[in-house]
Image 1 (tube, helix red, strand yellow):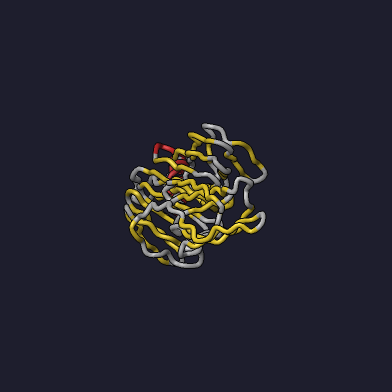
Image 2 (cartoon, helix red, strand yellow):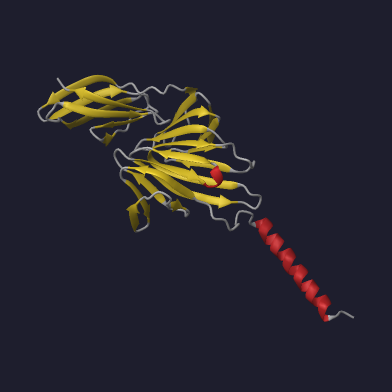
Length: 276
């Protein structure tokens, strides 16, 4: 004869089996406080989420999908990943949004960030779990790593340059993946697969072929490495795949136009273009 304790024991065991089955079917739904913490900010750095917009402060944490950091002209920020995984250095005129912060049932950590425009550099230690991943998503594709030192530059039209200093980065778009090993770089254009990796140049040269004043304006034509970002008169430029640009800007009274070149790894070079 089954006693009350027998039925109680059966009920508990059935409940335990059901719980284990649910966990196996949905392994990523593990309650965990994942975050990115602001370690340093310089200049005008803004936190945004929905209708909330406020200045960033040291120690602030990004914990939810949609949390966004925006750096303005001449500003920068450094984010620390939880449990000491590494750091994310955010350059000026950059927008970074949390796309996913998860932890799986085996301890794997999934970090996905969206970089709409600008430049970031990640310095990440080797990840301990085989299924852990850190990804940078841009309008052109995805750069995924497991532990490395690399940078990403994103032009306003989505063109994405990747430069790898240490480790390796897998750049993926349009169903194709190109590995960018240490000492290499590549470019991904929206709607196209990643370009082949070529030796890392870190070339901040600005080659001017035309600098022509016309009344109160000046026409500037030239080339840079196409993986770089270029700002002229504080305006971000879209560079064509060959690196060529063509822009007309107001002519300053001192007849000097400021230009800044930034590589995917964050190396910058400032130029003062003297207009004849």
